[in-house]
Length: 276
Image (cartoon, rainbow, N blue to C red; front, top):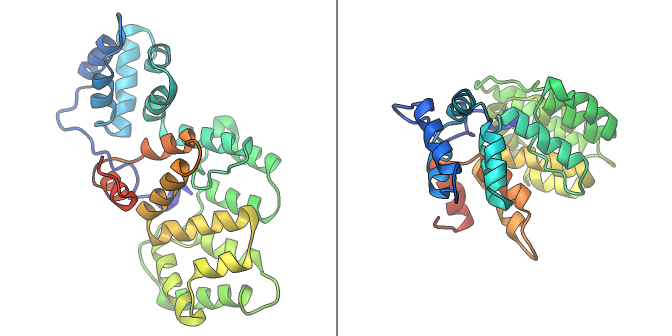
């Protein structure tokens, strides 16, 4: 589902006058010797864009003949280590690891779908999953979603009617229609489709999916609809759930917070009711 976030994720802005070698030296000084200067790690790694962080990793290895990943793992621990590792891991690789983790856990982190040839992700998905859920997740992992920002209102009305006829209007649900439309149409097109659906049905597509479906496919399609409506609100909901009740789902918390920065993070935190 990474394509859902195109243009909206990765909002930690590139640093002006960026110098990868200078940052690499500062990080090495913060990590070597007695005690680790956490503030330096935080200051650098949370204020550089993902591509800049990859350049820092390369400069660090060139200067020290060690990897930044190895040194961070050796000098930090716990949730702080996990967050720093998330920040220096290439996004596609990190997303792949999350999918692999999700397939081995009870909680499927539905918005982390990405491809990585080396891990043969689609092959692993086919082995681990089955049915309509597998088909939907594979479509997202293969990145086949339309990317156009143009909106065809006639097509939106047609798709809305198709969804209505495949769900609320019939006995039983034609899940394949939902998968085809929600996993292939562009985000701009889906936004209009949601409007048209409410006009036809009298209730939102989210409400219809909640009443017509269940299980993993329901959670996946709901995640898509929620992201189409508002990506910040979707992240805010996940953050709230990761911290609700007994204990904290630190893996989910790390996954989300490592992606957010700047005004985007501020928006999510505002929705959550936080100040920092």
